[in-house]
Image (cartoon, rainbow, N blue to C red; front, top):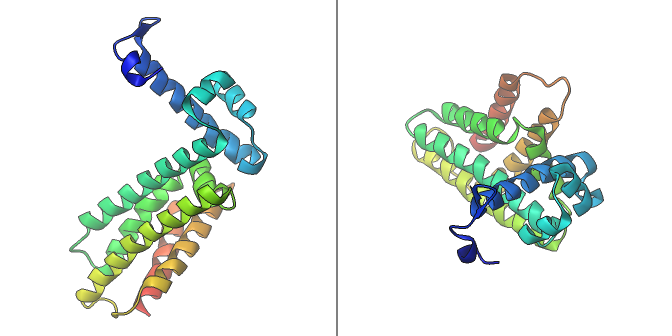
Length: 210
């Protein structure tokens, strides 16, 4: 049934479109849990439905399969973390390079690392999940690369770091940051967040300032 056909309809005293949004959110939440617990490769639609307390029929009304659920989760997590970093960079546009890096790292760590499931899905489970997911992952990495390279170029224009080609440096930064954040978010006990931010800020400053 199309969305237009559902508009204005009620079910159990609640608009149908609201119930659909809630159902979709439950599947996304369960996808986070199941993909993290079982690994994407070993997960199943049945396990996701069981965790969500919903039927497979309801699942396939929202998604074409596990891959489409993973892609939506990945995009959602990536958008949240990139929006947080972008806002931090804009807010610190007049700050020193080290202050800007520290703010951006903090925004990223808090956005993606506060929930270990998000870090695990977005940084680990998407890798090798299939050609479509891999293509999307590489596209998002390019977006991140452009964002970070632009920030580095702005700092270079202010004379705070040397000018240069930041493409390879940014790739190294992305790899290092993601590895550390995934390791930190899944640790038990988890090291202090400020310690992780301080280490990553130094690594990034060393990479762009060399």
